[in-house]
Image (cartoon, helix red, strand yellow):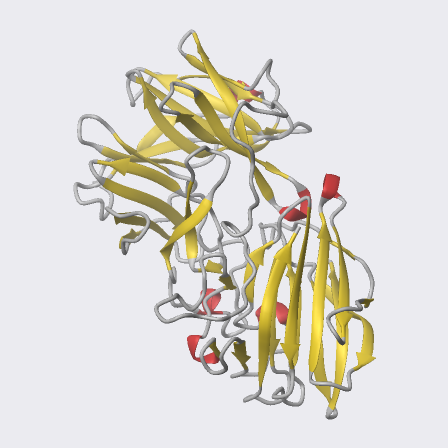
Length: 469
């Protein structure tokens, strides 16, 4: 399974599972999507909520292909490898950026991308998949939203094309006005049509994905649901076939339980604690970590001080969201807590370092140096405007920091703590009401950060990061 992580770096994560329930991150398709100010957080620019979007993963004649597209660069990307777990990805890109496309290898040797929203189009790729064959772009379905009615807020997009028993099945999502995210399915005997469509599923807003069949003959659809501040969460929906159509769910509903292996902990396979102790040959950062935008690799290290992550300052920043080298992991529901031990002894005047709950309406707990005085701060942002909620003098060089998130039933609250000894925790600031915002377009992430507001050359050392739920 491939996923979307937009402005994060590395990007386009690949996960694997042997039971459709328990997943492990095994690779990323790229380290850096492109070298440009928007992706580097330079020149005051960012690409929150953009970067690389909806991916398409295919296996064809011994090779894995994963594709994506980016509004930020205006390009479409195709990555391929024969070893999806270890291999380096070969990469090509070309213009334009084909929105929410699906990659499809047909049995006659032709390769297509189907893309767009509302009006779906198709193009044929050239033989080496380095671009589009001229003159092949055409409208595939004039109004793919039509089966869901006339009043539509979001036209059909998120294409995924599959072929089952000689028929083509095209999955899309749309959002009827006043309704919910809805699966629309079209089918055809020929890729050029004619296509007939119907509403495929409409429950809880669970939508967008495709079909999976298992070796024992069962069928499922992997979809997702917007679930407040934790972001989009995956849903596995059983499928049966009737009259040549996939029928999703049980009596049109998402079942609460499935006859599948138990869901084990997401730790250590999708998120994980990190003591920052590396043995020879181990990667500098495990796959659970992603940087907020492209990092400046000269300004971080896990080797400068054994057992610590060091974040150095190299420029002046005044805005947390534009500061480079914030190292992040996903939050997870229904509750999750992250903590760290921070050494501030080498921070300089104006430096601010600590632990974050990253989204547009972020929350920070950390240490700032002002007028030579160390203070523990909690800062909360609401509608993009940040406010210092509490400040406490700090008389020592080490401090423990913690953020506890509660996403239960979309409660979406985060609370912030500090400790001077790692045993007794004190609340600081106020509860942050976490909000899923379109500008960022992803759930909250825990982050370790350090940036300078007055002078450069200081650094903060993080002894460990620990996550639990």
